Image (tube, rainbow, N blue to C red; front, side):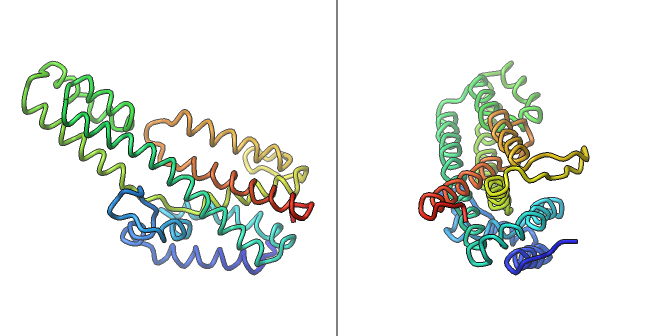
Length: 259
């Protein structure tokens, strides 16, 4: 059914083997961290894209590789395709790392400012601005703290909660090949914009350029309107698409084609 090419097959095999060997310690070691974290290592910008959090995460990424990668590899050749895959994955990781640094550093400074000058309203704002997914869990405490703003126990507990929440959120490792996969999708749409693809749900045909455009818009909307509990690295997805676009435009300017 699927005519696998060498690089695509190797990507599937490597990801599959690593998934079988992956436990939480592997994710903690190879996943990409906040660059000021004591657990950050430069090699994580490469290794993060080869490990996955669960089977669904792995399947969704590798299914896209299975479907789209062989077609691109036949056009570019195995070496060029694999370099493209690595560059989009690493580039997406670097872009995500930079934006994550800005957001996390802001959270860190706001936490430090809160600890030095606490109040119920500042605590509420700190949570809503930086960790809204935990607001419901802290709601009763916030209400009690607001009713007793001078209570030393509430003040100290709020400081501890703020510091622990920052420490936890700032050190969650990012894993997965999604950045490289979204790079593949963008490249496919640029090389074969009018190719008809059959959706699974609903089972209707759609041109590649429209499908990828909708994906891109959805990722951007999801990042700008992030709902509590959404742990997807939408910025890494968008970063993969951006890096892919830059690479393809470079090839177009240099060789006159996207290949």
